[in-house]
Length: 224
Image 1 (cartoon, rainbow, N blue to C red):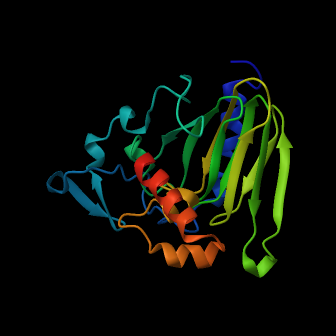
Image 2: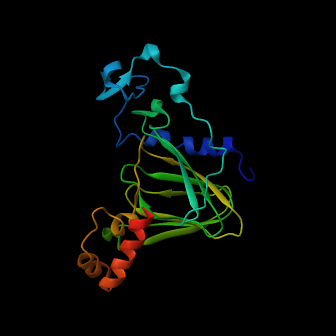
Image 3: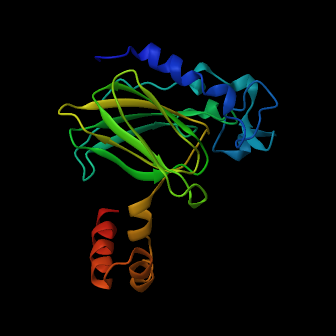
C-alpha cells in the first residue's frame, strides 16, 4: 500500500482510545469478551462475558484489513467494519475501526454514527470530507480536502460524508469511539424505510413534488 504505512495509521487511530469511554460502559475488569451463548457466560459489568479462563488471543484478533473492499456498488465505496461483532474482545472497551475504500468519484454518503465520534486518516488518494453542525449551530458545514497523512474528526451524531475527488482509488482508516458506533445513512433511512414514510410527509419536509418523493422511495427501496 502506498502512502502512510499501516502501523503509522494504527498509531494515529490509537490516540482516540483514552477519550472514548463516555458513552460505552466503562470496564470494571481487564476484559469482557462478548459471547452470543448466554448459557456459557458469566454476568460481569452489565454484559454477558466469556469466562476469563477460556479467553484466547483470537478473541482480540482480526485479519484482513489489508484487503481492498469491493466498490462495485451504487455509491462506489466500501466500508469494512471491525467492531465488537468481529472482535468480541472489544466488548466494553469503547472503540472500533473501519477501512473505507473509494473508487474514483466514490463516496461514503451523508450518514451519522449515533454512538461514537469518528477520527479518519487518509492513506491514499484525495478526499473531500465534512460534517454539518446541528440547527443549534446554524447547520454550518465544516469541510476540507484531505491528502495522504491528513486526519479529520467527525463529532458524534453529526451528519458527515467523504467523497473521492481524485482520479485514483482512495483508502482511509477510521477509529470510532464505540465498540459498535452504529450507522444511519440519511437517504437510505428517509427514502428507504420499511414500511415507507407517507410521501406527503417527505414532500413537505423536503419541499419536493410528491411524485419525486415516490420516485426516490422506489429507488431506495429497491436498493435496500
